[in-house]
Length: 141
Image 1 (cartoon, helix red, strand yellow):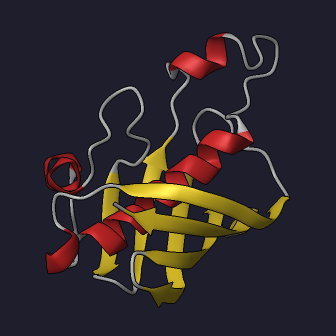
Image 2 (tube, rainbow, N blue to C red):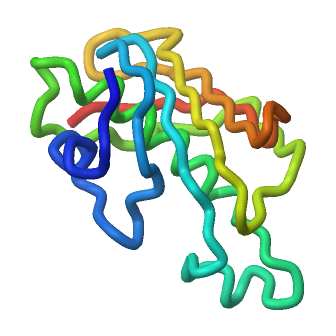
């Protein structure tokens, strides 16, 4: 199931400039989602991070992964209209940079879920090279 911005905005409460995913290419509600972010030089954060060498802040890559995971969780019928909140970030490793011109592949798979709480295994990659891996804990409310 593919989703564009309009469909993503029907699931997530995030809006520009904080909606950090451009498309969802694969979606299995409650299980996993794969999305993409096309990083351009015009992103607001590049003005200060860093003007001499623009790099997407790692925390924003984590947020983009969380948003992809939120699409997976919030696309379940019982979660429609709700918000997924961060509960924690574990086992996080940054292994590469994200720079203007990159197309980030964002994959989040739900590995544990009980009631409103759960954990997603998240991986971001650029051109097949992993740039971030983490376990993201969430709570739906």
